[in-house]
Length: 313
Image (tube, rainbow, N blue to C red; front, side):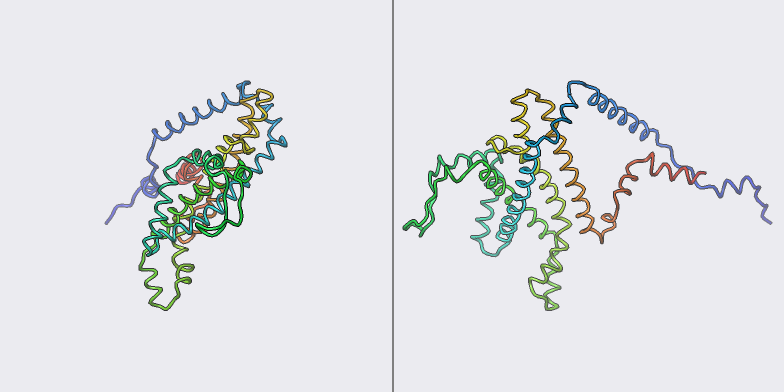
């Protein structure tokens, strides 16, 4: 006959296992928090940052005008660039060897030239082509325009950045479409579905989880890349700040004003990208996590540790 266990032994057997101690994690977290605290203290207490001047110019009219131009340029470039990029992706995937070669050559050329160099070429287009004409190829001309009056700094920035986005977005779209197994389309064709319906209902929804993250990163990168248009005197956010500090010589505070606005905008875009990715990955368990879940999983002090302590109590 089995001997009954003592109450103390039964309690020990029924108790949940203790969590494994991880002193290295706590030490690393403490050091990281210490470094972050020291950096924040240095930035906030250093009088040379002149945060009062930053607050003074944060909503200055010329700064807000430059901010609106930056937003407009980013949106226009992304919309037009992606429209052109989708066409290039279709050409790259076409059965026509001429279209494939042209699309490949365009993408290769644009991706090989830095965006700043492209902007300078378009801004100096008048020195290469003093006038542009429209008419019969190799025949009479009907309309002639002088490029010196046509290509302003803003138009040169729009054209140069749009062509650059088109090359990169074409590869993003093509990669997303190629990530979908061809058997999906073949199975749909065997059921009698048309090509457009197959693309819209089967191929595109499966390609979007691969397209959206890269497209979101490109959008955020383009928002920051618009700052290079200040080189050709386009009054964007950065150039507006430069105009002000050229007058009052408050260089660091005005650069911080531009930095604060870039941080705010990229944060909003990152949040939007997260929810768009969550929408297209809602069938995936990894895509169903909420921001709160991600934060708790990465903050042991408020997440896992609290659960372990509750289990031990």
